[in-house]
Image (cartoon, rainbow, N blue to C red):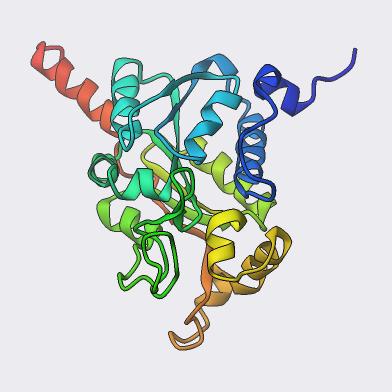
Length: 275
C-alpha cells in the first residue's frame, strides 16, 4: 500500500494553485504547519483552523481541516468561542502581523492573558501584503511601505515580547529560512496545553522587498539567515552586538500555569455544587 504524502493528506488539491506571489514565504510556513501537525499525530478531524483576513489567512482555504475564515482581526475571538464550546478540539489560528497585532491586537493580548489553549501562528512579513503593502505594527523603523513612502517613524512591536508580557505560556520564533526549526516549534506549540504563540518571520518580495531594495526572494531568504541568531548564542552577546539581529528559538514554555478552559470547567463544577 502506497503511503499517503503529507501534502495530499492536509492540502485541498482542488483549491490549488494558490494566490500568493512567486517567492512569498507563506508557502514555507504552511509547509511547516502541516508537517508539524503530522509530527503531533493528532486526528485531522479534531483540529480546527481559524483565519482572519490577509495573505496569511488565505492559508485556511488550502488546508484540509475543519475551519473558519472570519472577519479582519477577529480570528482569535472566533477561536476562543470554538475552544470554549469544545475544549477537546485543537484550535490553530493562522494570522498575519497586521491582522493579529493591529485590528486584532486586543483579542491577541487577552488570549495570552487568559492562557486559553489556542495555537497562534503569526505570519510576519512586516506589512499588509494583500491590501497593497501598507505599514503594519511590525514594520521596522525607517522602512518604506505604500503608506510610509518616506520611511516609517513608528517603533515596531516585538510580537514575542508582546505575547510573553501579556501572559502566553509558550512563545517562540523562527523564520522561513529556518523551516525545520519552524516545524518543530509549531509542533511543540500545538502539543502545549495553554496559549501558544509562534512568530513565523516571512518574506514579501513583491511589495516590501521591492520598496526597500532587499533583492529577490532568494536574497531575502539569505538575509534572514544572516540576520538570525539562535537564542543560546544571543544569550552570550551584548545588546550592542544584537542590534539589527533577529533572535530565534523558544522563549517561553510554562507547563505549570493552568489553562483557561480547565479553570472554567472547575468553576462550573463548583457552581453546580459538584466540588
